[in-house]
Image 1: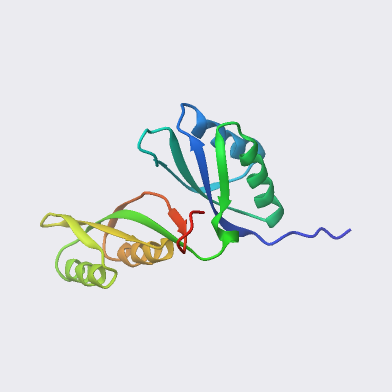
Image 2: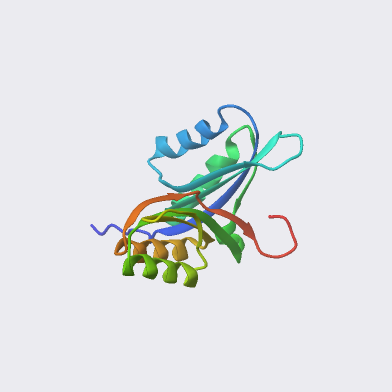
Length: 171
């Protein structure tokens, strides 16, 4: 007997929903009940009257699982629209991170030099530490954090990914 496993893919989904209590719990429950993982989750109100929110979910799995997630999200009552940006085509994905690094002497100088290369901005400075703010693609933030580990990385806070399809049309 040969078991065929589909390759896992990373997908960025945007879900437009009514801005009501419990919707985030419903969506998280949908993932939990089926054993799916959420890699990143962000939510923001997107209308002047505060009635609609946009949820950006990054998840991974085989194509059949992604299709199932998409279909199940569309069946939830307060969901207006589900868009798989990964399948739609080119899109822009960004994340914000705060990265605290402690160090003195050469390590401090090197942390500042690397931060400049990555366009990370110091938003808090003491004589023994920095907090850098940076936005960018998740891979860029991962690389910056990895380099800071050897220079005194203390703490990292990340917002999660927000994404939009490229071009003039709304996705």
